[in-house]
Length: 603
Image (cartoon, rainbow, N blue to C red; front, side, top):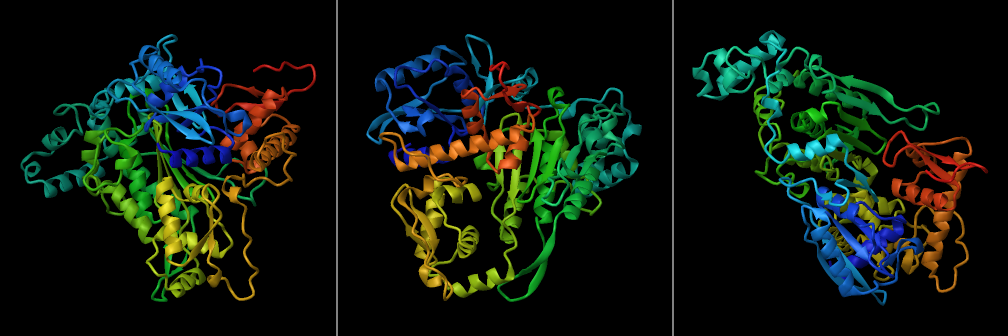
C-alpha cells in the first residue's frame, strides 16, 4: 500500500463512518492495542485476508493521530502474530505518513486451507470477519474448515439406507444413453457397470452414492431434507406493511428438477422489456439473462458443501429491487475469487457429482453442466452481451454468495443518446451506464462508482479518466474530493449550469439531511458534517425504536442506511446508554431496544 491508496482507504472509512470488512482500525496512540488477537484470527481465516491500520481515531471520524512508536508497534504486532496465534502468522507491515502523522499499515494474509482455522492461543477460539466485526466460529463452521484441508469426498459416500429403487428410472435411462454416446470407453460396459464406474453407486449392485441420489434420485430430500433451494422475493413499496417475503418457494427433488423449477421461478418474478440496439431494432430481453442465471444456479447446486456440518443449510435465492442474490453453504475450494472466470481455471469441490451432472439433462434438454471451467465465463459473457455489469462474488470461507446487480436494459432514449455522442474513444459497458447516470444528474466519485460497479480504486480511476478522455465527463475538485459530471457541452439547451461541488464532497455522507452541527475546536468542516450525519442517523433510529425492539434488517429498511452506517449509529446510542442489543452479536434474530429509566444498561 502506498500513500495514495492509504488516502483512498481512509476516505472510504470516513464516508462509511465505521470499519469495513477488509480493514480494521486501531488507535495505538498511547500503546499497542490489547484486543487485537481475534482480528488476526479472523483475517487469517477469511478469504483475501485483511488490513490493519494503526494511528487513526475511529471516534473522531478516523482522524490521523499517529502511533505511539512506529518500531515498537511493528515489533508488538509481529510478536503477537508469532507467539499468540496457532498456527503462527507472518504479517507484512510498513509505515506511511498521512496528514502529518505516522500510520502503521499491516497486511494479514489468508492462511492456506491445509492449516485453517487459525486460533487465538490463549483461548483456543477461532474467528471469521463479517462487515466491521469479528465473530467466533461455531463448532460446525470449524468442522467445515478442518474438512476442507483435504479434497472433499462426501459425494462419494454411499447412502446406506437407499437402494437402486431410489433412483428415477427416466433420469437413469437418459443418463446411461448420454454416457454411452459421449464416451467410447463407457459404451463398452453394461449399464450396471457404468453406474459403478461413474460413481452413481458405491459398489456393483450396491447402494447409491450421495452424488447418485442428488443427481438421479426420485426424492433426495427423503435422506437430505435441507438440500433444497429456498427462494423469495423481497417485498416492494406497494406490499402491505410487515410483509417479509413475496412468492416464497422451496424447490426440492433431484438437481435437474430443482434447476428447472428455480429457473422458471426467476423468469416468473422478473420482467421483460424491449431493448433497442444500435441498429434501431427492438428486442425482448429478460431482466437477468437466463443463461447466466442457469449457470449460477448450476454452480450453487453442484459445488455446495455436502459435509455433515452443512446438512442443515439450504441454498438461498433472493430477488431484490436492484439485484439477484444466490448463496450456498461452503466457500470456494481450490481457487480464489480473483481467478473465477479465467479460461481453463476450474476446481470441483464435489468431483463425482460434477462428473455425473455433465451427463444429466433437465427439462429444457440441456445438460446441468455444459463443460468444465465454462460456467463463470458464460455468466460473464452473457451479462456483458446484455449490457450488464459483472456479478459480485463474495467468499466467506464457509459460505459463497454471488450478487448480480440489475443495471441492465438501458431505455431506448438512452441508447439513442449514447449513439449520438460520437465519443473520442470507445466506451465500455460500465462507462455507458455511468454516462447515462450522469445524464440523469448523477455525479460520480471514485467511491460511488466502486459501490455501484464491483472494481478496485485503480479500475475506477481508469473508468472515470476514460470518460474524461472521451469528452463525455469533466472532473471537478481536487484529489481526494474529485467528482465527475456530464460535460457542459452535452447538457441539453436551457439546462441550468451544474453546481460545482466542494473539494471534500467525495467523503461527505450522502444520507446527511440536516445542517451540520457546529464544529468543535480544530475540527475540519468535513469532520463536522460527518459527525452531524451520524447524530441524525442515531436520532432517526431512536425514533424507530420507540415503537419497540427492531432487528437490523427492519432498522435498515426504515432508515435506508447501509448495515455499517446503522451499526455505527447504534453503537453511538449504546455508548450513550440509550439502547441495548437483545441477543447475540451477528445473530439475525437479535433486536435493538431502547433502554428506559431504571433498566439495565448492559448487554
